Amino acid sequence: MQKIQDIRHSFAHILALSVKELYPDARFGTGPDIENGFYYDIKTKNPVTNDDLKRIEKKMREVLKRNVSFKKKLVAKAEAKKIFKDQPFKLEILKDLEGDKVSVYETDNFIDLCKGPHVDSTEELNPDAFKLEKIAGAYFKGDEKNSMLTRIYGLAFATKKELDDYLKLKEEAEKRDHRVLGEKLGIFMFDDEVGSGLPLWLAKGTLLRNIIKDYLYRELISDGYDFVETPHIGKLSLWQTSGHWENYRENIYSPIDIEDEKFLLKPMNCPFHVKIFKHKQRSYRELPLKMAEFGTVYRFERSGTLHGLTRVRGFTQDDAHVWCREDQLKTELAKLLKQGLKILKKFGFKEYSIYLSTRPEKYVGTDQGWEKATATLEQVLKDAKLEYNIDPGGGVFYGPKIDIKVKDTLGREWQCTTIQVDFNLPDRFQMSFINDKGEKERPYMIHRALYGSLERFIGVLIEHYAGAFPFWLSPVQIKILPVSDKFNKYAREIKEELKEYRAEVAEEKETISKKIREGEMEKIPYLLIVGEKEKKAKTISVRKRGKGDLGAMKIKKFKEIINKE
Image (cartoon, rainbow, N blue to C red):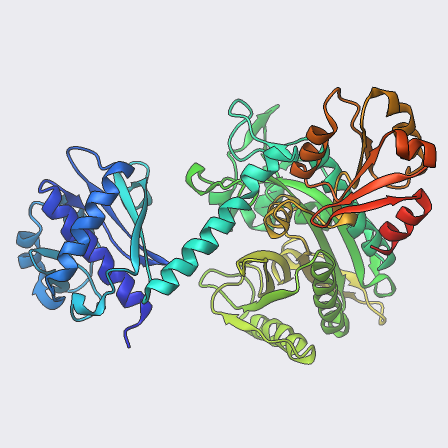
C-alpha cells in the first residue's frame, strides 16, 4: 500500500501537468505534499483564479484516466539546466542543490526537479479522493524580495470516504471559526488602522479574559506563587545579556530610540523576572521561589502567518518562573505537569498529546547539562505514567521542554501548556542563592505557561465550544427577557436576586420572540422570560441553551439548578 505522502506528492505533479496543458506559458516553483493534501506554486501570463479551479480539476481527472507513470531519472546538472532552460524558478532551485547529479521525475510531458518518492502510475490514485481547494499568493522561496507566485492548494486522500469525512470536519470547523464567532459574540475585533495581529478586546471578551485570569490567579496564589508586574519596554542591553537578541532576533521588533538609548518592545517577560529575583540575595530557604505575571509581549510575525487570535503580534502570556535547588527540580517539574493537566481538564479539554522536545542545532549550555535536564523531564513523564512523543530538536535554545497539545471537540491539536528548563539565564545573569553551607550556588530555572497565551487559549476555547461556553465561563450567564416594557421593573428585581451571577436584562423595545432568538444567537446559557403570569406568581419561565423550555419556577429552585451546574 502506498504511503499517503507519496499519493499527495503525486497529485501535486498531476496538478502541474494539467496546468501545463491548460496554460502552456506556465512557470513552475515547487509542489510538495502537505498535511491533508498538496500544493503547487505557478506563474502564468493570465493569472489563475478560484473560478479556474473546476476547469483544472476536470483536466486532472482526464490525465488520471490516461494511466500516466512517474519515472525517476538521475541527470547531470548541465543536462538539468538544458531541461529547465525555460523554467527560471527551477534553475534557481537547481543552483542550491549540491552534487554533480540531480533527480528528476517525468510524468507524461511534464518533467520536474524532484527527489520523490511517488506512486508508480496514476492507476494508484483515486480520482474521487482529491479536490482542488483554493488559491493564494506565495513568494518564491518564501522571500518577499522574490516573485509572487500563485499557489494552488488541493486536498488528497487514499479513499473518497476519507475525503468526504475531512470535508465534513472542515465544514464543522468553519462553523466554529473563532474569527467569525469572536466578532459575532462581541468578544474581540481587529481594525486595519490599529494594525494586523493586534486584537481589540470588547466588553464581553475582556470579561472572559478576567474570568480565565482570576481562576488561574486563585490557583497560583494557593500554590505559593508571587505575582509581579513588569514594563512593556526595556533597554536593548537587557535582551543582549539574556541572549534573546542574538538567538531570537528575527522575532523581535526593531529597537526604539529614547534619549540616545535603545529600547525594545518586550518579546518575553523572563529577563524582568530575573531582575526581580536578583534585587536581593536569596537563601536556599526561599526556594522554590515562584513568580508569575500576566505579561503582554510583542513578537514579529509576518502578515501571512497571522490567524485571528491564534497567531498575533501582541499577546498576554500566563507567564511564570520557578527557581529551585537541584534536589527540588524533579518535584517542581512534576507539580507543574500535574497542574497543567488539571487546568486543561477544568476548561473541558479531556484529550491531549504530550511531546518531549530535545536539544536543537542552535543551543547554549553543555551537552551534559542538556542530557541531565532532558532525562529529568522524561523521568517526570514516566513517573506520571503518561504517554508522550519525542520531538527531536524541538527544544528552545536554552533548554529542553515538555509541550502539551490539547485536542478540541473536532480532534484538532493546539499548542497550549509548555514547561521548559533553562540553563541560559541563570548563567548569563550570574544568578545565585546562598546554600546551606553558606556558599553561593546557581539556581535551576523553569519557565512555564499553562494557557500559553490568553489570546490563543481563548481562540481555541471559542472553537472547542463553538462559542457556547459552559455556565461558569460564559461572560453573560443569564439574560432576563421582559415580554414588554411593563415588566422591566420586575426583570430588574429578578436581576437583583441573581446578583451573584453575571446577568443582564434585555430592555430593548423588541418582541419577545426576537429577544429569545437574539439570546440564542448570543449562546447565553439561560434565558428567563418574565411577563404578567410570572410577575403575579413571583416566578420566572426558564429556557436552557440546547434544552429549550424548562417551565416556570421560583428563583430559589432556579438557583439550585445553576449552583449544581
